[in-house]
Image (cartoon, rainbow over the protein chains, first blue to last red):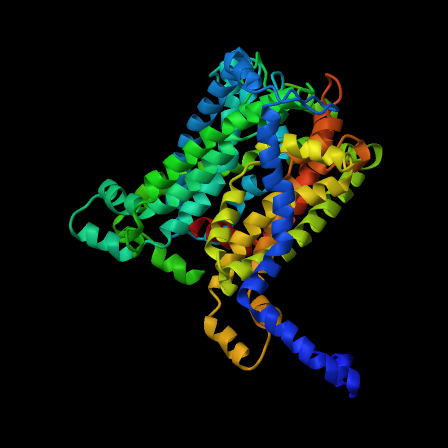
Amino acid sequence: MQARPAAVVPGARARQAAPARRALSRWLDDRNVLGLAFLLPGALILLVFLTYPLALGTWLGFTDAKIGRAGHWIGLDNFEFIWNDSLTRLALFNTLFYTIVASVIKFALGLWLAILLNEHLPFKAFFRAIILLPFIVPTALSAIAFWWIYDPQFSIISWALQRMGLIHQYIDFLGNPWMARFSVIAANIWRGIPFVAICLLAGLQTISPSLYEAAALDGANGWQQFRRITLPLLTPIIAVVMTFSVLFTFTDFQLIYVLTRGGPLNATHLMATLSFQRAIPGGNLGEGAAIATAMVPFLLAAILISYFGLQRRAWQQGGTDR
Amino acid sequence: MAKTDDTSTVGMRYLTSPMQRLVVLWIPLCAFLFVLLFPFYWMVTTSIKPDAELLQRDGNPFWVTNPTLAHIKKLLFDTQYPEWVWNTMLVSISATFISLFCSVLAAYAIERLRFRGSRLVGALIFLAYLVPPSILFIPLSTMVFKFGLFDTRLALILTYPTFLIPFCTWLLMGYFKSIPFELEECALIDGATRLQILRRIVLPLAVPGLISAGIFAFTLSWNEFIYALTFISSSEVKTVPIGVVTELVEGDVYHWGSLMAGALLGSLPVAILYSFFVEYYVSGLTGAVKE
């Protein structure tokens, strides 16, 4: 460190300043004061742009705010409206369907991929690296690629299936309600598998191989080893990974926005896209905020179920049950 | 890495035959790789295919017979794509630095200073990470309007840290935890202040963590969609994902070539950054989950 000029200047001013500075530095070394000072920049940003909007959003849900017009308190009117609104109910159904189906398949395929990658493979690091690609590129941009893959006239999937003689007509992936639901779910799964697989792989690598050897010597077959060793030891990580996965799937926005904008016949509208639709292009901020707020209980439930339901086994990692 | 690879093999593997290994390991693995990578291959081939080849139904669509750079040229010279790239760079880098600065201080305070209530703050930070942008964008948009930030890059630079700071803080807390206390104690005995300790001892040791947090923050900002869609309306301040989705899609005729070129070029920066720092990225991802 370079010596500060002020510290080496001899003279009265420096002699006077030294005790004051020492007092200041001692005060700053107090862990409570310093802790607070260190937290300040982050806390300021989070309080202004996260905590306050969270409260503001809830409040907006109880008002009739429009774009460019402050709202008045209207009590539960918005919630009453969305409760009776068939479109919101459809969006809730779509969101639950989307989340449950996508999460279950992501978990199953992700775990499978993780187990495959946990084998002794050549170029393992390379495999692991390219497998994460779908997760790191911008979702909006990969969604455009899926849009092209799902094109009704030029879809490569339809082309390949037709060549194989499996279908006679091109599939309208995004034009038919149920087809569209499964198509967006497929795109979501494509994007989510790498995250699940890589995280579970990290968990698998912490399991000692001697457990499998002991089990194999005792005559356990592959399925029994998986069921009795892999799954229980992996449960804590599965809990965390699936909590995140469910959370991000439930609040998904960009994939739907790019692929279908909620269509056809609102079959793929999720809560998030519907709330955007009502609030920003529709201008009904209060209603949009109410829909967004209505997502919170579901999110909390998802977190509680997947986290506490699966997390209780601290002893499995050498800890103690609290 | 080699060490963990050896220990991670499932025991008794030598009992399986090569044929069995092909069926249960290599075929599924190749299927996974094919599905996960195909959209990228499709992006590349589409972006260099001439329009005539794109719209024909016969011939082999998997191959390009007359590759062309016309789509990329159109994208770079006839659209505002370069400006979107510049905007995204500016926003991502600024948001990343702001978040790293705040997160380093916060993580050090929570993990190492252990001030009164630090555990509670740590838990709150984790909860903040669980708040999804899709329930924040409406109130944030009214705030952005009120502050006069609508349609400015500053709106994005200020709002992106809301999801970056919790993540980076959480990640860095894990790294700081791994630095031995003894180092700090020695420095304290030698008369170093906490700030000096942070700058001279903890930060140099936490460089891998800083890189992880940095590339994560950059990637997350680059990929952000809903805030940029809501807070930006003029083409010249749009980011790449928003620009491609809202400006390149015109009318009913989709210019798939330039759309795919836009998607490809927009993905390249994060893919390149990622390829240089794969290990940091993976350790950041798995570290954040394992905590």
